[in-house]
Image 1 (cartoon, rainbow, N blue to C red):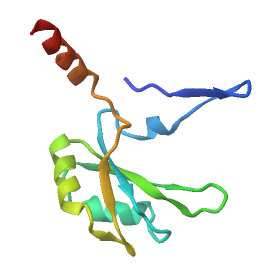
Image 2: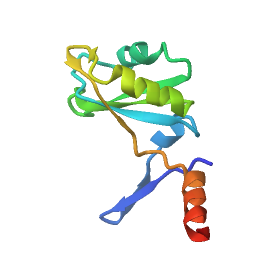
Image 3: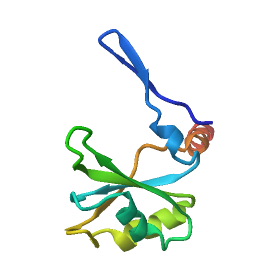
Length: 122
């Protein structure tokens, strides 16, 4: 079940539509140290050889169009995400070495419930 986060500030509220662009049960990596020459297509080509690759997105500044230096890559399988993390970290994408980290945008609520159940029963 995908929810669209809503935000409010200064008496105005709005919804963030970007979570609906991503697959619902995906595993994401945060890709840091991206240069201005890297776009969604370049990032997709780098990770497309991984079987469960879904989507890549480079975050850009709306006013200037330049990258903010980071982006996200989505996978359907957690094992493929782990393999990409170890295999691709430090490889050059464009003119810079990419820095990969697990994204905190996805929370596995089922795993959290299992962990809580184990700690209370012991």
